[in-house]
Structure formats: C-alpha cells, structure tokens
Length: 115
Image: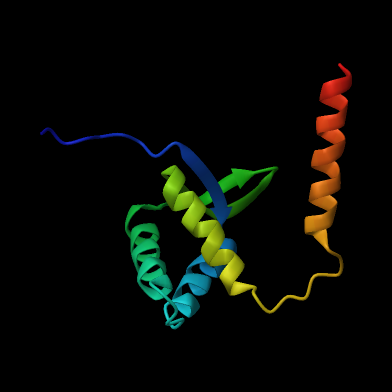
C-alpha cells in the first residue's frame, strides 16, 4: 500500500497565544485519568506540536502576528472540541441551552412541514 499525502481538510489559523492555550488545555487533560482521555489528549498534543506550521510575523489587518496554521482530519477536529470542553468543565451555564436547542429544532421542523 502506498503512502498517502492526503491533506487534512479542516483548517484553523490561530495566533501564538491561542495556540499556547490549545496546547495547555491538552497538557492539563493529560492528567485526567478517566477512560482514555489522557491518552487522546497526549496524542493530539503531539500531533499539533509536530504538524502545525508556524508563520512568524504574518500580516493580518495591517498588524503583524505570530500565527500557527493547524490542520485536522474530521475525527481530530471532533476530538479537539471534546478536549476543549473538558478543559472548561467547571463553567456553570447561565441557561438550559439544551432546551433552547430542542425548541429551535421543533420550530424548524414545523416550518419545514408548512412549506
């Protein structure tokens, strides 16, 4: 079987400080010993540190920033979202957003039936 040069389809470009936050969340999640969370965090952290591309002094909106281009396969993007959510698990929601979601979906379904 030949080597695949497939480029991950999900692209994210972040500045240096946000990249550092992403990595720090993964480092913290490496300490969570629930299921295989720590292993998945370490694997993703290692991939980000190996395959992300730094762009020092990239111009954006007339200012220069140190930027990082990150590419994810869909499963990795999903994992990154999960890891980020774990990093903020102590946030107390101010509303029941699940109920809001259900109402919006019901409204959309009702609108579709009327068309």
